[in-house]
Length: 155
Image: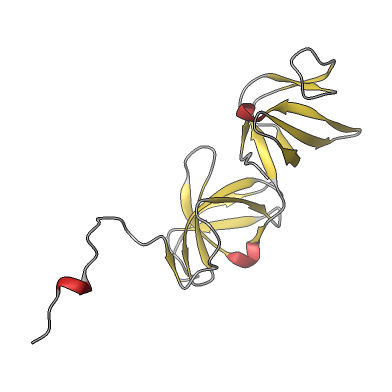
């Protein structure tokens, strides 16, 4: 006689990765191209839910299915993207008005005032501070508190 006891998990957790990459979930990625579509499911047959127009936009992977990644945005928009559209390049969004500092210190000299939803490149992070880069007409490099960046993780 077969028993069904071992066929079911004792937890109610859903599986977040089916034939995925084996990398940790959740994790941060960014968009490889400026025009990218988010779909309602893991495949091209699923309808497009959302269109992104910003290369480097940060996304959080929350599940995997083969070569497809379920992602969520800063604004909690959730859908699926193919892995070829994603990059491991670290970016983030400033979440509130903050100041770019020359050194990782509250008393450091402020280089610029940063506004919410500004896209930044994340160079490295400590427990409290992240070194970032902003590419405009001029390149700005400095430090901001980690808590002010959506997408910042310790590295």
